[in-house]
Amino acid sequence: MEKFARYVDKIRKVLSQGAVIALFAMMILGTADVAGRYLLNIPITGTLEIFEILMPVLILLSLADTQSVDGHLTAGVIDYFSLKPETRTKILFGVQVLVFCLFLLVVWQGVEALMITLRSHRLISNIDVPLWIPQLVVPLGALVMCMVLVVQVVETAKKIRRKH
Image (cartoon, rainbow, N blue to C red):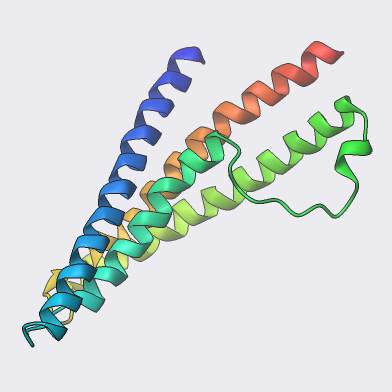
Protein backbone atom coordinates (compact mmCIF):
# COMPACT_ATOMS: atom_id res chain seq x y z
CA MET A 1 0.00 0.00 0.00
CA GLU A 2 2.95 2.31 0.67
CA LYS A 3 4.07 2.03 -2.95
CA PHE A 4 0.55 2.82 -4.18
CA ALA A 5 0.40 5.86 -1.85
CA ARG A 6 3.68 7.20 -3.27
CA TYR A 7 2.38 6.63 -6.81
CA VAL A 8 -0.87 8.48 -6.02
CA ASP A 9 1.13 11.29 -4.40
CA LYS A 10 3.17 11.76 -7.58
CA ILE A 11 0.07 11.77 -9.79
CA ARG A 12 -1.79 14.30 -7.64
CA LYS A 13 1.26 16.60 -7.60
CA VAL A 14 1.49 16.47 -11.41
CA LEU A 15 -2.22 17.25 -11.74
CA SER A 16 -1.88 20.06 -9.22
CA GLN A 17 0.90 21.55 -11.33
CA GLY A 18 -1.44 21.28 -14.33
CA ALA A 19 -3.99 23.33 -12.37
CA VAL A 20 -1.35 25.94 -11.61
CA ILE A 21 -0.45 26.13 -15.30
CA ALA A 22 -4.16 26.53 -16.16
CA LEU A 23 -4.46 29.39 -13.66
CA PHE A 24 -1.36 31.07 -15.07
CA ALA A 25 -2.70 30.68 -18.62
CA MET A 26 -6.01 32.23 -17.54
CA MET A 27 -4.19 35.19 -16.01
CA ILE A 28 -2.07 35.78 -19.12
CA LEU A 29 -5.00 35.32 -21.51
CA GLY A 30 -7.26 37.59 -19.47
CA THR A 31 -4.63 40.30 -19.30
CA ALA A 32 -3.86 40.03 -23.02
CA ASP A 33 -7.55 40.10 -23.93
CA VAL A 34 -8.28 43.18 -21.82
CA ALA A 35 -5.16 44.95 -23.10
CA GLY A 36 -5.98 44.04 -26.70
CA ARG A 37 -9.61 45.03 -26.34
CA TYR A 38 -9.15 48.41 -24.66
CA LEU A 39 -5.70 49.54 -25.79
CA LEU A 40 -5.50 48.21 -29.36
CA ASN A 41 -9.20 47.55 -30.08
CA ILE A 42 -8.28 43.95 -31.02
CA PRO A 43 -9.89 41.43 -28.63
CA ILE A 44 -8.72 37.82 -28.62
CA THR A 45 -11.28 35.56 -30.29
CA GLY A 46 -12.42 32.63 -28.13
CA THR A 47 -11.28 34.00 -24.78
CA LEU A 48 -14.58 33.09 -23.12
CA GLU A 49 -14.48 29.56 -24.52
CA ILE A 50 -10.88 29.07 -23.41
CA PHE A 51 -11.80 30.28 -19.92
CA GLU A 52 -14.73 27.84 -19.91
CA ILE A 53 -12.26 25.05 -20.69
CA LEU A 54 -9.61 26.11 -18.19
CA MET A 55 -11.92 26.69 -15.21
CA PRO A 56 -12.87 22.99 -14.81
CA VAL A 57 -9.21 22.09 -15.39
CA LEU A 58 -8.24 24.40 -12.55
CA ILE A 59 -10.85 23.00 -10.17
CA LEU A 60 -10.83 19.30 -11.01
CA LEU A 61 -7.08 18.87 -11.27
CA SER A 62 -6.51 20.49 -7.87
CA LEU A 63 -9.27 18.53 -6.13
CA ALA A 64 -7.16 15.52 -5.13
CA ASP A 65 -4.31 17.71 -3.91
CA THR A 66 -6.68 19.67 -1.68
CA GLN A 67 -8.16 16.42 -0.32
CA SER A 68 -4.74 15.00 0.47
CA VAL A 69 -3.88 17.98 2.71
CA ASP A 70 -7.39 18.16 4.26
CA GLY A 71 -7.90 21.57 2.70
CA HIS A 72 -11.62 21.29 1.92
CA LEU A 73 -14.06 23.35 3.91
CA THR A 74 -16.28 21.48 6.31
CA ALA A 75 -19.53 22.37 8.01
CA GLY A 76 -20.28 20.80 11.35
CA VAL A 77 -23.77 19.48 11.97
CA ILE A 78 -22.76 18.00 15.32
CA ASP A 79 -20.13 19.07 17.82
CA TYR A 80 -17.54 16.80 16.24
CA PHE A 81 -14.66 17.76 18.52
CA SER A 82 -16.58 16.91 21.69
CA LEU A 83 -16.78 13.27 20.58
CA LYS A 84 -14.25 10.65 21.63
CA PRO A 85 -11.29 10.29 19.24
CA GLU A 86 -12.36 6.73 18.39
CA THR A 87 -15.83 7.92 17.42
CA ARG A 88 -14.37 10.74 15.31
CA THR A 89 -12.14 8.25 13.50
CA LYS A 90 -15.14 6.00 12.74
CA ILE A 91 -17.16 8.97 11.45
CA LEU A 92 -14.20 10.03 9.32
CA PHE A 93 -13.99 6.51 7.90
CA GLY A 94 -17.68 6.54 7.00
CA VAL A 95 -17.43 9.95 5.37
CA GLN A 96 -14.37 8.92 3.37
CA VAL A 97 -16.12 5.79 2.10
CA LEU A 98 -19.22 7.81 1.17
CA VAL A 99 -17.18 10.45 -0.67
CA PHE A 100 -15.25 7.69 -2.45
CA CYS A 101 -18.53 6.17 -3.66
CA LEU A 102 -19.76 9.56 -4.86
CA PHE A 103 -16.57 10.24 -6.80
CA LEU A 104 -16.70 6.74 -8.26
CA LEU A 105 -20.11 7.73 -9.66
CA VAL A 106 -18.54 10.91 -11.08
CA VAL A 107 -15.84 8.82 -12.78
CA TRP A 108 -18.43 6.46 -14.24
CA GLN A 109 -20.77 9.20 -15.49
CA GLY A 110 -17.84 11.30 -16.69
CA VAL A 111 -16.60 8.42 -18.84
CA GLU A 112 -20.15 7.83 -20.14
CA ALA A 113 -20.49 11.51 -21.14
CA LEU A 114 -17.01 11.44 -22.66
CA MET A 115 -17.89 8.44 -24.83
CA ILE A 116 -21.09 10.11 -26.07
CA THR A 117 -19.15 13.25 -26.96
CA LEU A 118 -16.42 11.25 -28.71
CA ARG A 119 -19.02 9.53 -30.91
CA SER A 120 -20.76 12.82 -31.77
CA HIS A 121 -17.57 14.62 -32.88
CA ARG A 122 -18.79 17.90 -31.37
CA LEU A 123 -16.57 21.00 -31.43
CA ILE A 124 -16.43 24.06 -29.19
CA SER A 125 -17.64 27.06 -31.16
CA ASN A 126 -15.24 29.89 -32.09
CA ILE A 127 -12.10 27.84 -31.41
CA ASP A 128 -12.92 24.48 -33.09
CA VAL A 129 -11.52 22.36 -30.26
CA PRO A 130 -13.10 18.91 -29.84
CA LEU A 131 -15.43 18.96 -26.83
CA TRP A 132 -14.08 15.65 -25.52
CA ILE A 133 -10.73 17.25 -24.60
CA PRO A 134 -12.05 19.40 -21.73
CA GLN A 135 -14.55 16.67 -20.79
CA LEU A 136 -11.64 14.31 -20.19
CA VAL A 137 -10.73 16.37 -17.12
CA VAL A 138 -13.88 15.31 -15.21
CA PRO A 139 -13.22 11.54 -15.00
CA LEU A 140 -9.46 12.13 -14.71
CA GLY A 141 -9.77 14.48 -11.73
CA ALA A 142 -12.41 12.28 -10.09
CA LEU A 143 -10.30 9.14 -10.62
CA VAL A 144 -7.27 10.67 -8.91
CA MET A 145 -9.57 11.88 -6.12
CA CYS A 146 -10.76 8.27 -5.73
CA MET A 147 -7.16 7.09 -5.55
CA VAL A 148 -6.37 9.62 -2.80
CA LEU A 149 -9.50 8.53 -0.94
CA VAL A 150 -8.49 4.86 -1.17
CA VAL A 151 -5.20 5.71 0.52
CA GLN A 152 -7.01 7.74 3.20
CA VAL A 153 -9.64 5.04 3.80
CA VAL A 154 -6.93 2.42 4.30
CA GLU A 155 -5.02 4.70 6.69
CA THR A 156 -8.19 5.45 8.67
CA ALA A 157 -9.09 1.74 8.79
CA LYS A 158 -5.60 1.02 10.19
CA LYS A 159 -6.21 3.62 12.92
CA ILE A 160 -9.52 2.01 13.81
CA ARG A 161 -7.95 -1.46 13.86
CA ARG A 162 -5.11 -0.27 16.15
CA LYS A 163 -7.64 1.06 18.67
CA HIS A 164 -9.28 -2.38 19.04
